[in-house]
Image (tube, rainbow, N blue to C red):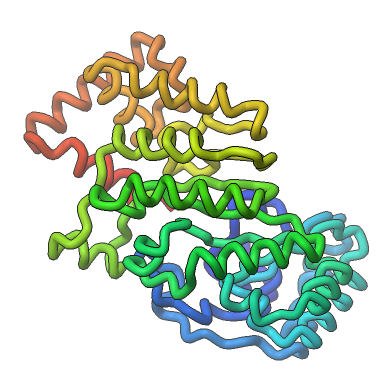
Length: 341
């Protein structure tokens, strides 16, 4: 589909049906070791007139389609001047009067530069949902991945957004601590989430992208990937340490191994832990079969292991991989998940 207005490269999974309006190009930080989304894009803030023109084009193109949600691209609309962003929000709602939710990514470092009054004004004007790429609550991990912020600033900015009335969704990347720091990653991330109590926790799993800084660390041996099993052990530890919060917890992306692990905390915590435990209790043959089946897109849930026809077909593929690439099955798993868009 060719749109008449300018669009950025990505949007959150939860915004699949949303109107997309680009307010900035790229990311104001663009140094995170795991990210390649904006490598070839110099960060810039689009002018209010440019954005308004795109809103008009979108309104004409979609011809009164009753959008109820809109996502502002690219990496951080909060880098805009508050006064400019307020003008954009007002113009957007004039042309799409059915909008009930307008959302954006927002870096912790951009958010803490906004006053309490500014955040309240933005929320009142319609920017009422915030997506934050927290990634980790560990200062060690945040430093290693060059996130450009701290656990303390993540907490401060998130609490400010929630205090302004915004719905808050935090992204976590499993496996980001590698073999060396996985326990620290799980424990510290749970501590930060417990302080924030975000409305949504969205879990992703590390897939080292070609051309990323993390790939260089993988090559030179300063970062070691965990096994798929260890990443689930990490997630179990994270869930176990989440206490006193009421977040909607979801493994929400195709890159995640256990996408059936989703629920409302605190009520569904036992269910979430049970899913982790069920996977971890599998014998080696079933664990390898399920993991490959998920990575190839043949399985969706642990119950799919009961499908004997699929099980045997995946076993055959597993044997072929092991024959061609002996001892490299974890590398194959990682390659498959790193290619998930």
